[in-house]
Amino acid sequence: MNAGPRQRFVVRGTDGPVIVHNCTQAVATGDLLNEALLRAADMGLRVCAHTHDEIMIETPEPERDAERLKACMLEKPRWPGADALPLRADVGFGYRYKVKF
Image (cartoon, rainbow, N blue to C red; front, side):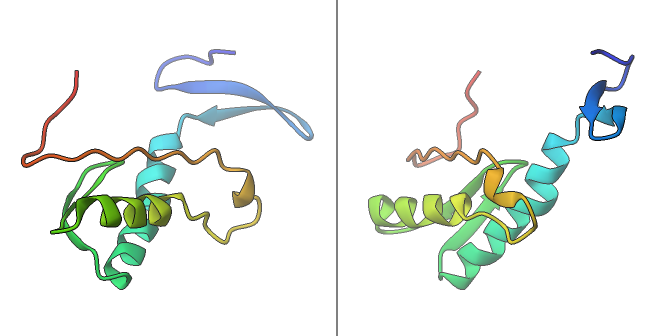
């Protein structure tokens, strides 16, 4: 149920209703993407840029490294309950960054 401005909602908690904030993007960037960036660097992938939910790499072998990066981004964190996160990743190739509208 909508609980007013600033993307707040009422959800059913274990002990009754709770007002929550739509923090999905904060978790995606602050936790999931940052962990994936560290894993990508550990794998030797050359990260050249990133946005709130994307990682861009430079590579001479795009097909191979795109699959490695995708697997890196789909790796679930080790927090309790993280195995239930609905993670998804897509890959694309290009010579320059393009924004899709």
